[in-house]
Amino acid sequence: MSSPPEAAPKPAGDPPAPPRIPPPGWLTRWAPGLQLLLHYRRDWLPKDLVAGVVLSAVLIPVGMGYAEASGVPAIHGLYATIVALLAYAVFGPSRTMVLGPDSTLAAVIAALILPLAAGSTERAITLAGMLALLTAAFQVLIGVARLGIVADLFSKPIRLGFLNAIALTVIVGQLPKLLGFASGGDGLVSRVAGLAADIAAGRTNLVAFAVGAGCLAAIVALRAWRPGWPGVLLAVVAVTLLSAALDLGRTTGVALLGPMPRGLPVPQLPLVEWSDLRTLVVGAAVIALLSFADTSVLSHTLEARDRARVSQDQEMLALGAANVATGLFQGFPVSSSASRTAVAGAAGSCSQLTGIVGALVIALLLVLAPNLLHDVPAPALAAVVIAACLSFADVRGMLALYRMRRVEFALSLTSFLGVAFLGVVEGIGIAVLLSMMLLVWNAWHPYSALLVRVDGRKGWHDATRHPEGRSVPGLLIFRWDAQLFFANAEVFRERVLEAVEALPQTPRRVLIAADAISQIDVTAAESLAELEHELRERGIELHFAGLKGVVKDSLASLGLAGVFGASRLWPTVSSAVDDYRACHRVDWRDWQDDVAVAAGDGRGGPAQAK
Image (cartoon, rainbow, N blue to C red):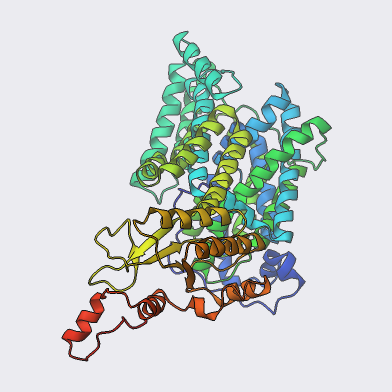
């Protein structure tokens, strides 16, 4: 999953023209990447080779850093990167999208597997693999059943709170490594307390802190001043060379990556206990939805850039295939990455071959020269993860919500506090539940208004916004800005009656401006009939303006055609007002009447329908 605030990938120049591919067949549906590779254009090869090598230089430190942030050894980040790139090259519909370990998923993965692993590295690896398989199952389900709309439950306020909480959680978890010591704690509060206690006890390794802080400063500075440069690669290579030259691991106690196992992972099925499975399933569903939401945004960006339509359902199938591969090859859940996709695009990537080349470079490194990574300082990897968190944290976005929409800010804050203090799954669950409750409340208690005429302005306007407006004597115009169904039918009836009772004199007619009502159910129809009966007993007529044909049909099918006949249904508010003025001979002039008289056209009667 890529972090939303990251910059969208921008091509170095004009995007390559879409390839000429034969008419769609089964490959288009199930393996579009393979179809493209089978019809590969030779002129793309030099660009894809260069882009793949450049991309691999970024994938290595990022993959290792995110693996450690996820609670598994760094080598498993490289395993996950290799197989995810190869799987997407076959099943992925986007020609230049890059998949791999992700910083925002790292905290979710760690929060799920570390408590279950109970300090066992092997168990954490197995749990991470099973989590990837479960995530793949949900992603394939979303792709096949086209359930991507469920991701809309993660509204922007919820996502802002979630991302900021994830950033804070990951940064706090990485600070001990940056400072040169190990620190425990299960939750954010205990981690902060443990971190403060360790710093107060003097456990900070100043050399490790200098290495980590220097690496972090270099990444942030290059990102700001030279965004086209591979800042992560340059910073990590520099501190690694310094570490090797000064033998920092032996002379100063700086933790190093150490010896890496030679070779590639062997496929194996990660088997876990049933009790663990129940915990992982919920987290896998959350990861699948979050990855879908961000992958969709990135995919649409690439779709517009490359001028080629991409199926979002196929994107989910490709993500599912990638996570099946990572689960079987000792990896953990992966997703798309906007930042690494941008690196590939800037390097001239033309097709999925870029990802294949990047994967092969990493594989060759693990087979031929794994010791090249021996002297990578652990504080440098912590700096990579912290820099990623700083890039997607969006405190300004939450503050903007506070200024614009207090209710949505409350949702964002709830998401933040829930994720930070209760846990990722619990926090997201609470925030989504509150969001759905707000949705129900808005549908249950929609906005309504009394309409008035404002001199010099066409149409009819909200009386609360235009206190200078004029009402037609004896006519109450009530606007309802929502559907009318069982949940709000009683609210509708009560508001109309309250408006009637609030007038100094009983009106002759109530006119419902019903343009926003596009459906009506049995409960609402009964409520309308009851309202009409109550108003009729008071000597008040009930009319409607702007009622859609489908709603009129519903009223007829529900047996209310006799109650609300054609004489009570008007196409517009103005035509209904003209009828009222003609029927009751009201001593009231519309400002357009005076305009018409001044223009000399002889009109002086009721305003014409607009």
